[in-house]
Length: 203
Image 1 (cartoon, rainbow, N blue to C red):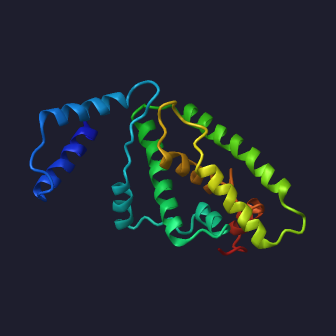
Image 2 (image 1 turned 90 degrees about the horizontal axis):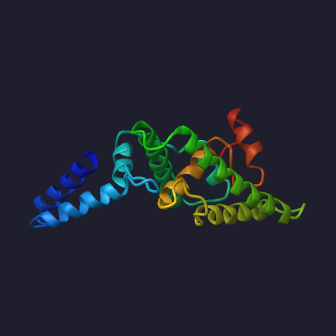
């Protein structure tokens, strides 16, 4: 019902702004069917939208000093890419919380999903480190880390449910793991995160 009311509110706003003249019964039925289908056993509903992140920013939520953001800076991501990453982190983290609060997933299912993500990352990270020469420059290490980052984020090989393929959740969950230093992008990310906790590294 919360999802249906949120959708209805959006339609009302569009009508008030003269971008829509009416809402038909058929449109309501289709939206109800879409919401219903998201609660099938192999699916999950998306409960956290981009607009929720925008509202959180207005309330002062700021992730610029989180570990996952430092990790992205260590492989030279730009400001716009960092902003997108922070939005994905916010949405994925709060999405998992909303699912758990509404008994749509159990913590064991989320933990298994995250363990699968880590396992997949470990294979790719090991390959990256093996291919780096011993005398690799810092620029080479950053470039390899960025390549690994996009290889992981752009390929949805592991899903929390078979028919749930929202890319923001896949990317955001990797940022959640990076925030806990369970995954990383720079070849020396683990030491850097450890140093960061005692204030010896700045990004």
